[in-house]
Figure 1: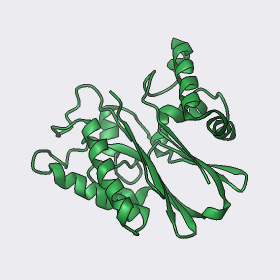
Figure 2: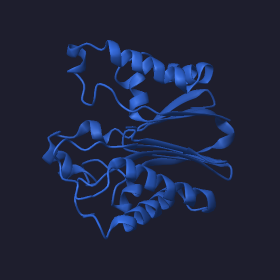
Figure 3: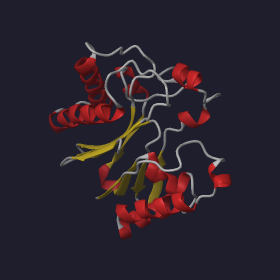
Length: 237
């Protein structure tokens, strides 16, 4: 079941990657992660289509509205509530606004310089036990995701660049970015050239091939699933 969700509009695009809960963990929610990414994705797309507020403001409002949609049935205080990453691009006047929350990166080609926009806080936790991750999620010193806390939107990695300097952009779930980050099949510039020349589908095909040939010894060196949902959006300016 695919827990990624991607939407594009006339001047914006985003990728969400729902976080699969560990087996046996009580989320306090009657809904699964797939519900969360689709509900949040709908709220986010609706606001991006009509609002001129900043990306963090729009995301915070979408998180708030999503929480209100199931506050009567679910325990939104549960730290294991369904959650998702966010990778978002949006044109605002002469600027291109970007926002990354958790491990779904954006890669920008700005005047020929390849700039990966990465939120790597999840990679630097002191412990990855179920209990530790629960305690460190959406907390200072831990990591931040889109779940039930609107304030997480303001903890994102975000900025603007002059749109006239941007040539290309890629939005990736971590299942796609593992082409660079896990398998080392290219650097970020190589990934950008691949999706530019051969398309996102070829990137995903190569990731799947690498997953199939990864040995148990190689797999033991990495956190994360052997096979992961993978989504890639490519934008040429």
